[in-house]
Length: 160
Ligand SMILES: [Zn+2]
Image (cartoon, rainbow, N blue to C red):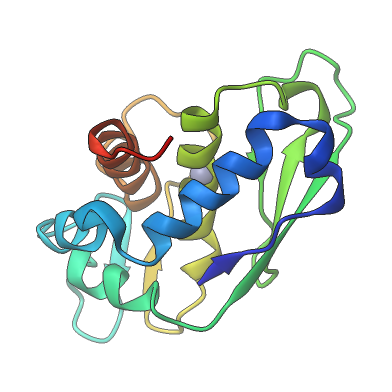
């Protein structure tokens, strides 16, 4: 899995760096996949083949897929919308809220990883989202838990 750098990134200094950093994680830098594999079971997940929750090992394996992800922006209807990013099931596009582009490199990279987990959540037998969009109580879902691993991995990496 790999994120392509969009043209508009050149207007946002953190954006290109965040994409490079995300792509390093997506290649397993900093022991990223090892940390994901340690997770036994995600909340809000289900493997419908064996009726078990989805494990970190199952999701970690999906990151190896050859998927090119593109990045676009969107203008929210509500200017104070708290949403930062979105994906659409079945599409390989991360959409960033136009009013939330000036976040730090680290935060932006962690958001990209969160959205990448949603993009991987298309396997027929596996489901590992986080239900509705309220973050509260979702810490142990795959998108939020892997986002947290991304943050921890980045903070330990020398990437400047
Ligand atoms: Zn999400």
